[in-house]
Length: 209
Image (cartoon, rainbow, N blue to C red; front, top):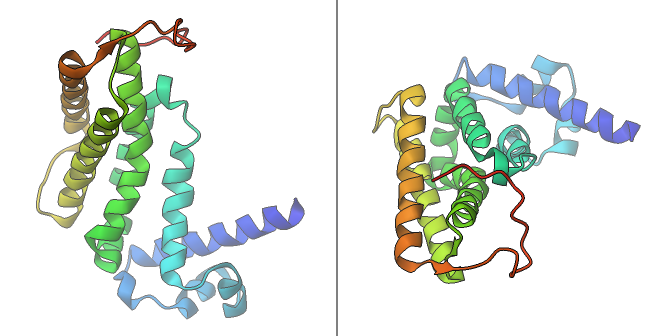
């Protein structure tokens, strides 16, 4: 346990150093030497924990965003999870712009999809429960992927500068659009079901559609 705690402390120190450097210069100009000098460890320590700077940047996203998202009870807390992701993007815009330049839209899009896929799936499930209707598995999977891709695409456009919007004023409309889309598909293709008969718990508090 002590080793794990020490390892995590070192990783976070390296991550903080990289984030600090990325606020001052492009990611492509940052070296391992600068990172280790910033946090007071040696190069051997860096390479013990990370293969390269790209691996460190991926770890930051996994630890700070994706990992935290996984801790939410997404059935009941999907709105809080969505707000967390939006806040993270807003507060780490310089980091994300550097990551966009370093990884490109494909890799950064993968990060956003990993962040939102669970939120979207849980939102679909919550609407299914509140409407007492269930989508066929293939339709549910497609709808989840479609909505997640749309959200990821919007965020990438915002970070790259192709689309500008105010996070505070866009979160609620996007949430409404997503929910309305789910309701529409459920109305047309959903199958009525009895949660108790299916052995599913209907004890969660689900918001009215």
